[in-house]
Image (cartoon, rainbow, N blue to C red; front, side, top):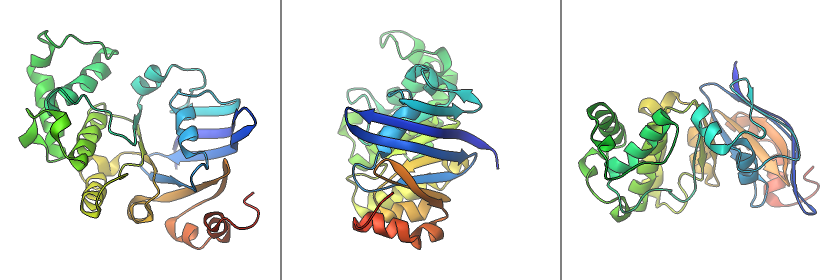
Length: 253
């Protein structure tokens, strides 16, 4: 299989804290890869090293054949690695349609700077694309509503739409169902398994094992900044090192 993201020997410390230790990981094109682990295991730190928010102390992060270490976060996003954050990052005073238009225009023009009073939002082709993207998530009927008035589940749908319209090569999802009721969680699982989302390469950080085992082709487990296991959901379920890490017993290394 072809890898789209390769992480080799990544280390990251904060003072005396070793957040990541010799992390090695490959993400294959077309797969949904979950990264799980106890609180404080280093999951978000690893994602931040991938998207340019943090620079590893050493090691390499290669995306689509290109070294990402030291590359500006915006340029990494523009190259096709798009992150959806745990707390939906939307523009609450703008309509759903405008929220989707902004990243679409940013992807096309290479900047998030825009003039909300200009005519750029009225371009027919990009408005049609934005409406079609909202329809992928069942939001076309709310296109003119203020984003801030939506439920948490619909805000998450909106942010997924904002990610999808950027046509990412790799979508990084940080706790996509955090704080959701079970119905919204199951709806989000269905969204990530259907339509254009189904074939997209995805990395998911998630604590809810129902979500993980419903979506993941492969799972990697972080404990104390080190990957202790990678495998299929069934392999991870039965791995004694994983059970030990989650029980908090013994030597996690």
